[in-house]
Every structure is written in structure tokens, then in C-alpha cells.
Length: 113
Image (cartoon, rainbow, N blue to C red; front, side):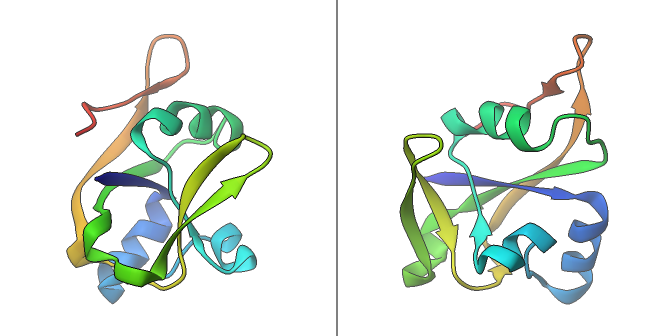
């Protein structure tokens, strides 16, 4: 299954230099890296990234992450979300996409696979 990470361009540029993504400031304060599934992605963007630009979407192969990936229930959304309790190795990333705004101000998402 493919899971998705949203990051700022600057955070992702740092990850590319380091060869792994250590997480955003929010991820670090929570102690894990937040991900969304394809069906969860639009609502995650709406709730947590409204008004932000300069974002990157990374598609990640969850099978590469091993036991460090845990599915945990988020009561605020009533769903289980993937959380990574380790750095994200860039070798697990299938592709990245710069998120742009559409005509309505929402995010223009690529085809999610």
C-alpha cells in the first residue's frame, strides 16, 4: 500500500541532502512522522495545511518501513492513521509531487496509486 507524507519544500530539501526525512517540527514534537492514506489525504490537507504553499507530497511504500510503522487510531478523525516511529528513508519514496493550488484554492492532487 502507498501512504503519503506532506512536507514543506524546505523540510524536503533537507531530507534530500540527508538521505532521510527526520520529520517536521510537528512530527518531532509528537514523536513520530504523520502519514495519510489516499482517501485521508484531502481532509488532512484541508485541516492542517490550509493557507500553506510550497508543499511536497511524497508517496511512500509502506512495506519498506517494517515494524517502525504503526497504525494508530486518531479520535479526532475517527480513523486509523499510519505513524512512523523512525526516520523515513528516501529509498521508501516512490515519487514526489509539488502541490499546487487549483482554481478554487484547493490542492491539485496527482493521481494517487
